[in-house]
Length: 425
Image (cartoon, rainbow, N blue to C red; front, side, top):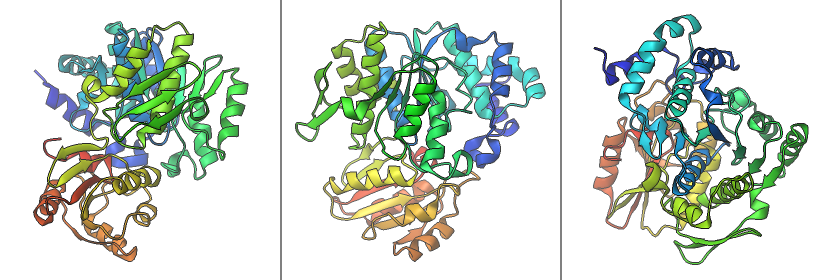
């Protein structure tokens, strides 16, 4: 009998997997997903949903929303990608990962369809998630876009509300090389007569969202205009709008989460308008306990003290700029950074913004897309950065630990896949 690990091995080896091979695995239409779901009786029509996209923050925002709705008593599905440690992290209900028996059974049942349709790994995973949510009769599912929006496999749902976190230059080889082109792809999740929330008003792209909302006859909410956040101290925050006044202490610690929190709170308030029972207490509890309720990993996650070691999955220039800001607010003597990237994430651009006073340990994740550690080191030297190349992620972290004093700070990141390989995360 084929087991769970054999099933995953089959999926990774038989289907094009984006996080292994990059853009070659991306399908720029929805036909495969629609065909798979039709064979399953169109499960995407059997549950309510919230759709979330954006360049940075969509994963954190999805988890926060799920935690809020869970706290409000709803049976809440959550679909996110990629996973860090295990495939089952992608599909959860009330924070509990998909049953491994279901994964095995689903793949076995779908093998004839897979041979005919030849879906990507992501397309099959989306169909699996939707079937699971329908079978388990979730009250609502938070569905995170994989890449872009308009042509993403998840974009066959008709959500109660859409949330777009922010727009930055990422996946430019697929989504376009300007903020406007990327915003047009993300705006593709705004559905006819369904409200949409934009976490952050960005002048370069606001017209694209306004035009799309007008075209779709959708109410548009700019969270950054409607929600104010003020830090009372380093941990506590006051969240204020015409409709809500709450004090929160988020367990997601990155300063960059403030932009996400505004979008998440505004989405919860819009859901209230739609008739969902989401009391203030549920919003507070969800934001304060996102990690505990959903099992989210890798967002400014402290894994040890003396020296402090922080893992963060930020992997593009905008995300890493936010990390650098946070580092400045974190007391430390010397900054050490275990750093690796994938080839298609504009390494030149990212390296040019990294602090030159840090010591770097350049590594590579064990995937074909990883940028070679020595090549990365040589590129970094041209940008005035100093460090060493240590291919294995955990060997690089071990060396950083050995060379640190107790009051140094070690960051681990540059790629989701670097963080994913850290032992004990």
